[in-house]
Length: 113
Length: 112
Image (cartoon, rainbow over all chains, first blue to last red; front, side, top):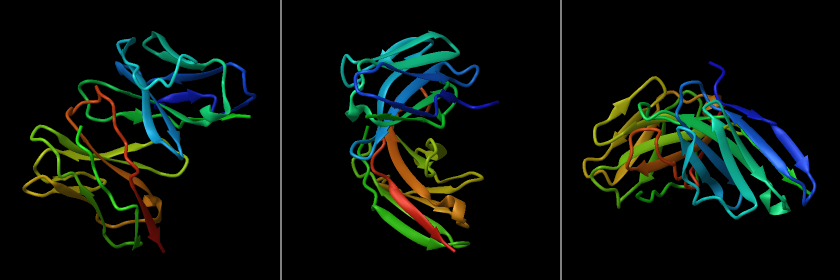
């Protein structure tokens, strides 16, 4: 299995631009999580899905952030418009209710200038 | 989920055991202790978890005190590749079906 796949691995954009981060979970996993990591706040959950349905989006910072999961093999995290304070590493993770671990992708390093 | 306290850093010599402590004095009876680690520039990786009994797998051992207020992750023969940030997490669920709440973790440096 290829593991959790995230794209792009690095993204540099200018303030005000729209940014879309993508995630492909491990096949068969029914939970998908989006985390963000910054030096100031550490690793924090943004949102998670179960069977493509958002379960907890309380960590989404504001309306500029949105996440979708149109099918079991794909999810997006969109920031519109982006701001410099959105600069962070964004991780996607997947798992199943029958497993005890979450499998993390390699992350997308976002820099907003 | 209960809060955890870890020292900010520690080091150990390659080939020696690394004992990483974690305090979780407010843990409730049905909360599990999980350990994840994050090697530089990678996503976190699951290591081990337990409820009250000591646990061992191919990566590490987890020792939980009888009162469950603290635990120790043991890497029996640390290698340079074990240099990472190690997170101790206490959570209600045993499955992957809820969020992980990461603290600051402990940075382990393995020296040659």
